[in-house]
Image (tube, rainbow, N blue to C red; front, top):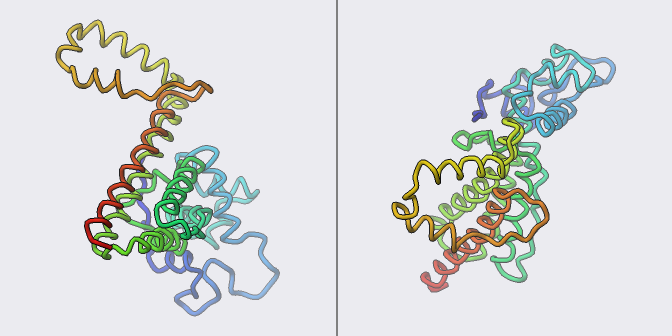
Length: 270
């Protein structure tokens, strides 16, 4: 399931994300401007409840009613603070990104710092797998999204590569880490949704494949060679096969990407 951010009212959404003043000149967006007792609810409380719900049950379970139930309120009570589920999703996504570290030491150079950034981002996605369902085609444009971007850009400017090159490197790194983590999260979702583990699925399918394509090795010799010679050794620990493969792919792929950045630096003569 892919969800697109930014489907609510543009001005209202951006005001909530940046906690700006309401367009009509009222108090901070998402808060009551009328006098009276301090409200029991707040935008932050609603967003935190939404994140907790998505972490526990996935985005399919997300609704204003479900979030309200977590807070002991009706869905109608939430609309004073957050206009709809669309704005709530934007706020949840941006608030979750606030967990990402921003302070990386460049004393040892750009490569260890970018490696730490990639590992932290990978772990973040695994903690909040629902974030991967929010399409990158339309960014939220919230403050924490920009902080996350600023963090990586700062590390990469230490390479002294031109901005035109760095722009593409930033995109490549984000797409790589996101894609690698998505393999793990989708593997976990598949097992939960179907009731069949990765091991059971592969065993049942591979045995049938051998029967229906007895000449598989002759038809696809390089694929067989790659699977035979390139498989990561199993070190035990009970980690599912696909997760183990995804983690190894992440580690090796990251090194290859960083080698490419280093080669670009050498080529530029920096």
